[in-house]
Length: 601
Image (cartoon, rainbow, N blue to C red; front, top):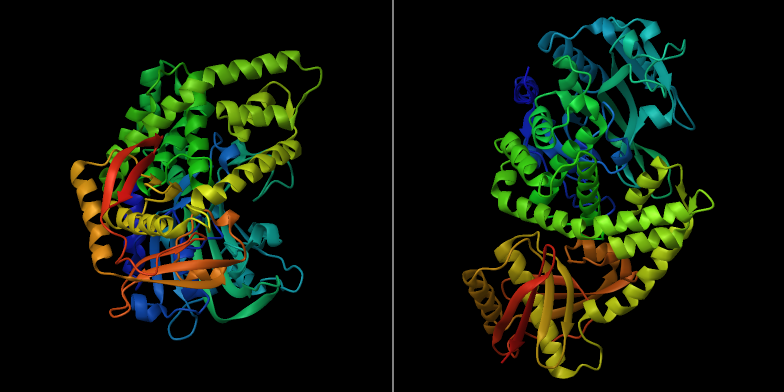
């Protein structure tokens, strides 16, 4: 069974059983408390908590999807049989047990029906885990009884605590509950021969978790307390790659049709056989796949947030490419394979093909410039060491001067028997960020309070420019900095390629149109959380106070909002007196960052 067949079979199975198929949401969540979408339920969290009406938006209490996911906690595990940064999650949901919704028995029956009857998997190889009870939450005896009724013997039903068998919430608060996991026994040859070996064994990979059934009964509130939800829900998730590897009889998903074309290309380019260095092959193939998906969503390599994760995986792929003697530029042909593989399932990859290749090429070239000198610096450092500790200051110098993510330094020195003083590294990094942030108040605030009328006009124009860029180029555009003097504004923003003359003209025209409309500019003060919930843009959230100023450029007659941003700078009272907006120059600022200089006449 191919990957496309499995994905299609799952969705058709649940569609034929009354579920509405919902498209995957973005990897970039709307919830500002999490960096990426890590589970299929995230796009349904408001429905599962009862805050939104699922029938109104979907017309069905039963949902199913194949969701793109990205998890950062597994990066160091990449290279083994089962872990990935980017992965797909198959899932089905029942929102509310009442009014024809199903709960534990329905979820278990669907899972067994799909695995045993549809996929023809051997039920005798299933071992089930349930929640044993912990703290104020009781043991899930109901789930245990349902599994027994469905032919799973008592000796293959194992009990675990919160760490293993209580799921969620995805952020600090939200819906959660006990879960029951289906593990597949790969056989004694994969085991550790310990009498207590079983699911969640720390010593081997004999038992592979393939399906997690979450019985969502609780809501964790801001006090950390677990309250009963007003409705019960089912939230399930299958690790698509793990299930596929079992169905194709492979030890790892890296040996399935999802990765083999990439691995074959790496072998062709390097002259190295996969089995001779599986770890390097797997890291490169995982990281190029996840990089393509992140860039397709508008993420570009940077030293902050999502961009930092992208930079980290790309640079890690380049480093492991060096261990296989791959030539510069090797990631581009690999990215083309990823795009070709997924283009019909996730068309955004093909739509952003040139952006993907440009961002990868620029980041690889940038890292190449410093990699060799950085590695030499590290080698010299290790040779002079009289202890096995790399100081925080030394690690920070590699980060600042050579672009080495701290995780990369850790990984390299660990291979040589050294450790990094992470606490001191964090202190050095924080001190650097504090200095940068102090300067950023001017850089990102644009102008000071005493800037005068012309400065306020130019600052207002940056808001119009930012909004116009996002409307005409896409939501991937994000402000990366601005600077204003009395003659012009400078605005840096995320975008992977040079603007065309036609694009520049459209941007100018849209800004001038909004000036001509004489839109009202409204200032409000509110808590940062309220501002974000109201849709205000804020790309420098870590430097904002608890109470922020929100500036809204809108038409009070129609209610149309053109721009809404958190900002500390001065502004005009309306757009009508700004004058004529003219872009003087458009150029590159750094990899994936463009710069516009403009004036008001």
